Length: 285
Image (cartoon, rainbow, N blue to C red; front, side, top):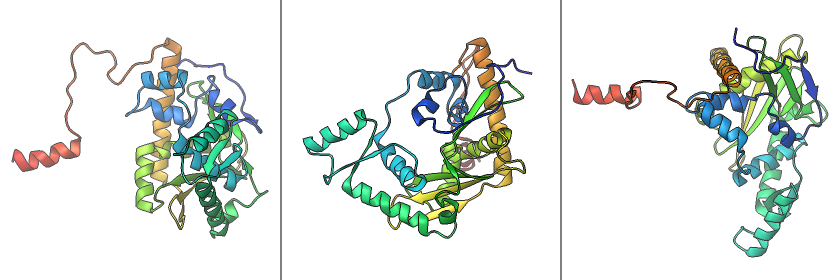
């Protein structure tokens, strides 16, 4: 068994922990961290990004605002009554909002977020899932992975009993687009890790379920609710297990390799396999 990376502790459920405190934790690893350890990421990049967190991206402001409207939890909003950010006064108010820990939104964007939340409430599946008072928002859950001794953490957007609901805003909520997003962002790792965390904390004695709620950021703000296939969940859990082993080894040895690792000769590289096969068929047959 890999040496434990952190002291083994009992599961812990924390209500009221701020997002900043949750993300600043260096004694545990989140789903985002596990995904960053695997290709196309690598441990070296993960450690640098963790030690040097980038400034919040403004394109995420809309998503944060939508979460607040739908979940009732999130940073305070500051509506900036300008049509865009080009005027100096608008930029000053925006920057002041950031300094105060608020999310600045143009009036048009605030109106859009209100419309998105209304669509959620009217949706026949998403609406009941997010019924106010029926669940818990932004609950922080900590537990120890028994195979590696690594302390893990998850923060479900919304938990309604054993049902974990993850709300994501996306440019296009069409199922084909969502499938690509699951692959590109490894959301199939998030699903099993959240299930494992909720079950480890004893919050779902009969087993947890994970539900994705995707909503388009383009009118009429269409919504797609889906559960991951069993096979993709199994793949995601296997990816998490590998990432946990990598993380445990990196912490134990204080060594965070890049993509190549220790080699004595220069490795080869080629095109993606599918493109090599296509061009081989065209040019080498």
